[in-house]
Amino acid sequence: MPILSDCHLHTAHSGDSQAPMEEMIIKGIDLGLKTMCFTEHHDIDYPDSPDGPGSMFLLNTDSYLYELLALREKYADRIRILFGVELGLTAEAFRPVSVYAKSYEFDFIIGSSHIVHGKDPYYPSYYEGRSEEAAYREYFESVLENVKKFSNWDVYGHLDYVVRYGPNKDKEYTYEKYKDILDEILVQIIEKGKGIEINTGGLKSGLKELNPATAILKRYKELGGEIITVGSDAHAPANISAHFDKAYDVLKECGFQYYTIFEKRTPEFIKL
Image (cartoon, rainbow, N blue to C red; front, side, top):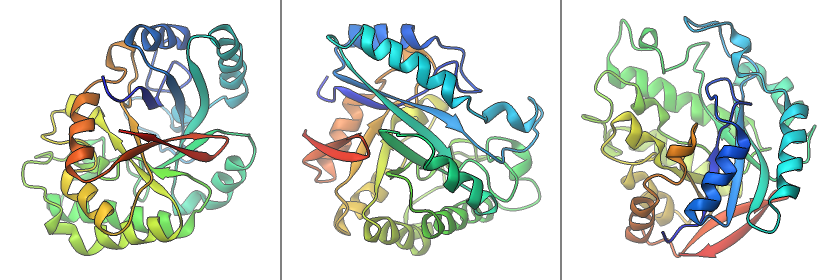
């Protein structure tokens, strides 16, 4: 396996995982990983849903950090463990999200869009009463708004997350259809000195491609983007570093020579 760092991982500290952190680490060691960065969910304004109240994605960061530090020390001679967070960005929660991002000494912050004007695209209600294209476009417009408004993040996560859950997923989805807004997002990310991630979790959802699609990754490179992390978005040990061989092939196809790891919010470039 050519990529030995997984920089998008969830454990039982995230509202949608039951995986013990130590089991995740042991699996990562068994797979030969050199680095694991845990990025537990923290969505401050997550709405009530059919599955539970909006607090389901509020992270108890102190408990998370306490366990991570203990396990980092226990396995220090076998693997590097990094302290990250997947921070849900919404314009409506700008102030509390910004305060939170400065409250801990994270190694790595993924900025992600999970909520669009109070709705999660995970649920069918987000798509009701309009075309799939309109729903996708609203999602990308919210990403652009977040990219412009927030600065305290390192990479933007699963840039086209919305296609995982659309009525037709990525069957009729193309970069060209949303080129105008996607290019603006990528330019803003690059101008801010930030990066994006290549996220392999979408394949588990039945997508044809990774998140984001290969055409978006190529365009990011063409525009001068170089910072790119690799994450499985694993919520269980079985999915750690899943499809990393494909991620390697796609990165090479797009012209990338390096992937990135963040420690103490500083990028480290690893040759592919």
